[in-house]
Length: 168
Image 1 (tube, rainbow, N blue to C red):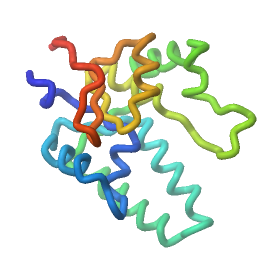
Image 2: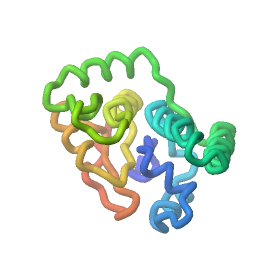
Image 3: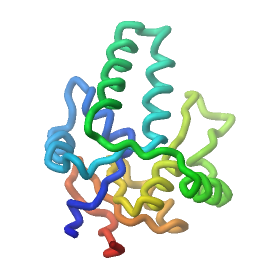
Image 4: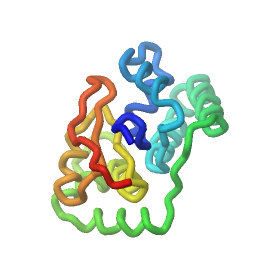
């Protein structure tokens, strides 16, 4: 199977390009070309839904618009990866690596209240033997040192950081 036809698990920064006023052209074109090989992991849904709820008080109209977009995405032909037992077990192991702690918990000194799901997204990709597609590869390269990813691709730059291994 070619690297481009493997399942690609989308990071939130990739999915959110679909609702931006000025999305990155490469990302949208790549997602269109990839079609049915794309999957949204539960961690991405958590980040998006949380953002929508947090936006309600500041901008109710935009919050409703984003909720409608997300609801349409749920009924589209894109795959959604659940938090299953295997993914849960791997995610739990990941949270026990001290040098990855900042990827799942927030520092008390942090100014913004932010939920972090990169470990959960990586766990989904590993369990499903899927490539991670992200615009911010730095944290996923760190995860890969401890938990090898099946592949890592930046759709904004159209570049591979980790080529997929043939594990069909």
